[in-house]
Length: 495
Image (cartoon, rainbow, N blue to C red; front, side, top):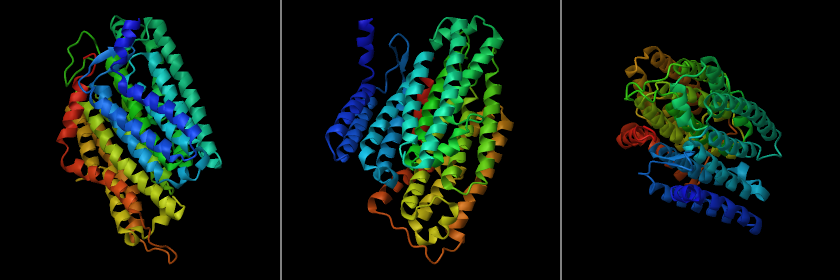
């Protein structure tokens, strides 16, 4: 046993660095009154973990008695998560909501490290209990971050709603796991796959699968498990809202995709790009199709009536979860790689949009769409960059959002799921309507006489450009991203 543990430890250096960063940052927070020391140490720890992660790029191992996989698939998500968290740590340094809570500012940043550890574990878990525990670690930290501004009623309410919905979905998920364990005698998803291929009771498996999907659906904000999302996004600090909409959602997708790929693929078939030989015990594709269509349709339609930008972007985030599910439900390499491509472009365009909302909120103390009247004329830099992010979220060329949707819809068409591709395109048209409302306010409606130009510091402009430039470049030159995504999926541990 000790030999196996010692062997496994050498492959999880990025995770160990994060754990050490968390422990030392807690101690630094207790010792020093100047919380910038904690912030800089957290950034240093995240960068060190990133550097260590790059040295693990060619590893393809099952560790800790087959409970944890270090493979190109998890490697992709860990790079994604560290990029997102590093960006959001810097993002948070410009947040008035975080900086105003001086006595607990250090806590915010080491909670981000704890959240990152949980998401790392989610992306690599190959055991149902490990999946559940990593999901709980991520969720518990998210609850604390959502209610971080406890002096604000809306923040406390958001955290409470998040806890209640999380507790319900967590209970359903662990019940589903217990049923699968009762049928197969194992928590190992590879062993479960073999047991399912040899034959099990279809009804019990269907029930357990639906219950487990409740846990996944809650994490990725899929309808009908999305009810917590708008209130939590609106009540949380904008930097926390950004984490939940990008990093936490990506971690949920990584775990869902691994679960589907290993558990429900026929181990005796010869997997190919066009057909993985899916087990027909449970109608997985049909379930995912219903979830995807409901998620993107409801998210887009409800977003049309929103007047608060945080709530509008919350429903937009729900709709994007639906687009991501379109790639997942193809259950082939092409669809999975399209999902990874979409996640990367979603990172830059969504974080960029939330960043501008936060900076404007810092200046005018409002998230209402009407407060953006004439903004594009008063502050052209903000107007142009915000428009770029919104155009990309819609999926129009020449932005990265167009490339993300192009690969998703291409995977559907190649799988002969033409109707789903059409539904996805129609939903993109609906999303254009509520994004155009923001354009109209910024460029076509006059400012009030009391409105002033919003000036940004050089650091704020650089941070916006750090997300705006990739959003534009990835719409024009995306070959390296596509190759990285294909390689990450094709070298999935267990293939």
